Length: 416
Ligand SMILES: Cc1cc2nc3c(=O)[nH]c(=O)nc-3n(C[C@H](O)[C@H](O)[C@H](O)COP(=O)(O)OP(=O)(O)OC[C@H]3O[C@@H](n4cnc5c(N)ncnc54)[C@H](O)[C@@H]3O)c2cc1C
Image (cartoon, rainbow, N blue to C red; front, side, top):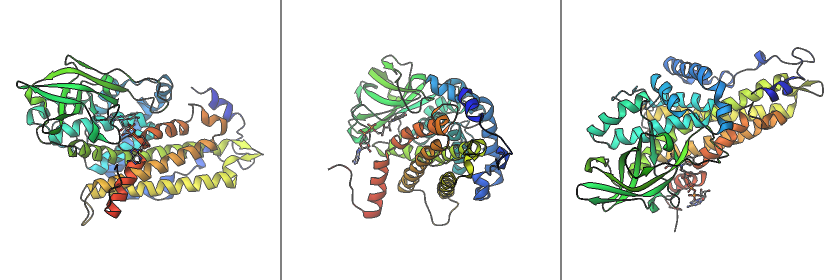
């Protein structure tokens, strides 16, 4: 890395012509007094996660992105050592933090890259949460401690080639054969799938949709990687192909039947996205601010142009609003707000607006970087590309509009 960065900085003449030093750049958190929203423990967690990412992820992530690969299993161990995997779950080797603390960690992870946050979200909020909430004691004891430590990687298979926004149309079938279950079907777009040790797979049974804990070494299970992505490239995505996968009777998650199972997991993961999006905004804004402080055109730093400052002011406002919403959701989820309860609709509202805001900011901050902004030396376009996935997965923008619209009007505008 670094070639284009060197070129862009060649015109900078720090200190002359009213040029700012990078150190003059003020943090958007400080400007809006956002750190005051967090407890000392939450701030310490953010600092610890950020330090780890500065050392192990930030120096490499642009190259991983360009290469379209991720050392997911190594990272899982690293994140497990820090207690980030399933960190808001209680017991079974999980850290048992508050939801807000988990959100704070998601903000740092996505500030590094959305693919990194996705690794942690899928592991903790989808795969581990499903087992923790709906699994048997044996399933929990078998998988959760290893998943919390990062020794075992998990994935979550709901989406299918013909069932995306409408999971009720899923076709993967689980049929009884004696005491066993036999699974057939195909899942699509499964994060961590090709590197996972265990998959939580949602399939149709005679009783309704059920979740299955499937060791990926089971004969008939394969997870071919999806290549050629233009978004979330520092993340492993795959299909899951289930070809007569035979599982014992106790492979089913016993505590849930119906789509409310996977939908509850999605609400958990969407909460992390509400926070993650704020990390993408912060990183884009800070990167552009630092660049604009030293990039000189027309004899002055581009940070001094009114049009550039308008972009920064709008981005800082978007950031402050997104953080306020994320903190509010965190406090509600932690039952720290009187007479308020977290609901799927509230999480949808946060996911919808924070991701949309992050995408707008990422695109705007990319323009501040000019030509340098289209290289991997700077993060905004990488974030913008990642956010296209984040806008789509865990419920598209339109799906969240429909959820919020239904909550407001009482009218269901999905489907026929
Ligand atoms: C990189 C990546 C990682 C992913 N990881 C996972 C994972 O780990 N596990 C998993 O199960 N899934 C995962 N997904 C799948 C993701 O959740 C789906 O892509 C998403 O739900 C959308 O489904 P779809 O792609 O089939 O789009 P579709 O459902 O076909 O939607 C296409 C368009 O139609 C719109 N649309 C659909 N229905 C309506 C409606 N009623 N009204 C208005 N507009 C509508 C959508 O909003 C969208 O704009 C991942 C996806 C990506 C891209």
